[in-house]
Amino acid sequence: MDGIKLWRRYQENLCDCPTLGISLDISRVPFTPAFMKQMEPTIQRALDAMAGLEAGEIANPDENRMVGHYWLRNASLAPTDELGKAIKKTLREIRQFADKVHAGEVAPQTAKKFTDVLQIGIGGSALGPQLVADCLGTGSDKMRVHFMDNTDPDGIARVLSDLKSKLKTTLVLVVSKSGGTPETRNGMLETEAAYAKAGLNFGKHAAAVTGGGSKLDDYAKKNKWIKRLPMWDWVGGRTSVMSAVGLLPAALQGLDIDAMLEGAAEMDRVTRSRETRTNPAALLALMWHHQTKGKGLKDMVMLPYKDRLLLLSRYLQQLVMESLGKELDLDGKKVNQGIAVYGNKGSTDQHAYVQQLRDGLSNFFATFLVVLQDAALTDKPAKSALEVDPGVTSGDYLSGFWQGTRSALYESGRASLTLTLDKLGARELGAMIALYERATGLYAEMVNINAYHQPGVEAGKKAAGVVLDIQAKVLSALVGEPDRLFTPGEAAHAIGNPQAVETVYHVLEHRAANRLGVIKDGDHYRAG
Image 1 (cartoon, rainbow, N blue to C red):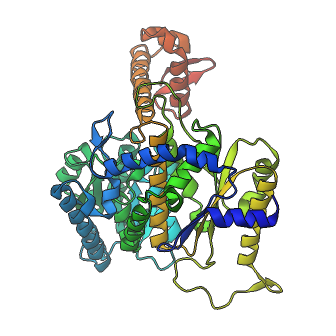
Image 2: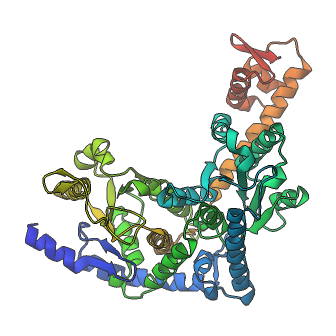
Image 3: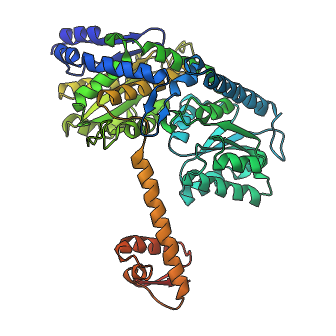
């Protein structure tokens, strides 16, 4: 297609959201008018379902739950006055608590003010807050935010080592809806032990975001933690960034949480449009459907041309893949749905995997994320910029690289979308998060799956529990015969579970490598 025809296609298919300074270009996806006409009834049914979800219908039938993350940025949408009041109350508490911490009215045990925040959580309790902190953070933040998001002992040790000199002025946020998430609990216990070793009362440095009456809620209450804030069962972890999960660390960091909520609420309003051509979430969902044939046949590659959006692909991996990666549809039919997500940043990606995107397998569609204003987090562009070549700035190079990459992919028959922001700040980030939440929900409705449960994740947790049960039995067997050398097969027989021999082997290898009650002798193991 020649340049004039491409320009016309661009003009005809640009979805502009002027109240947000955001536009979506779908012109480099080879859909036809016939496709849009064919899919119109499907997207309208999805919009009907989304309206029902926002009104409080049971949108997660497997767990018999409402889905209410859209109410978080507009409490008036909540289906009951009680829920609306709870949302507003929590927002007030977040603001008030952050103000008191900044003023030193809520202070650590042995210092005048808290200087740092450590958030302990995993999945949705970490990915969204990490994106917000990294995207919007500056050198003048009121507090520095750190994250502990795994049960890796080395990773935990690195975080605590970085905080060692600041432990006494670090406020710890423990985030877990159930309070029983092993990774979060383990990080909390390791951190609590570090505070005890430093002679500090952990409770005077800790706050919880959790479900009312959970194990964590009870623990925080018993140990007199300085603050507890709610997580509701109608907010899933991957859509919780605008609850206390994400707003509390952001407020402590000193970020503009009101602007983030405002941007999300405005995007919600825009994406309620029943006119498909003016609804960017509907268009995203339709393009995903076109490229994957509604079956996940292609991957989604995120290419943000802005360093501050580096973590967006990690955040979207959970939002999209946990929401859409389902074995069964709502009718119980086996469908194995999903869209794989991965990404890097521009122009770094041009020195990494764009070679394959252009010349290798055509098993993906790309999304470029472009910010027009080079300087982030300001309403005013720079008055001047250094020219690295005559008449050319570093930002001009970045713009040239994304345009060039987009053209190169198109010339090779590779589809792409482009999401353009006039500038990047808290309002724009909130809007972008809301856009992808809505698009994911609409796509799920289009392919008839439940976007709001995660049975595969729960299956993995249960399987881990089985491994730990086998470990306990194996260690007991070795201790029961301290002088005996066992092969993995003999140990498996000793616990009455010969089929678990490979699991037994891995348990013994790990414990022996860490000198945790097991000694390895050739191909044998014994207690020690």
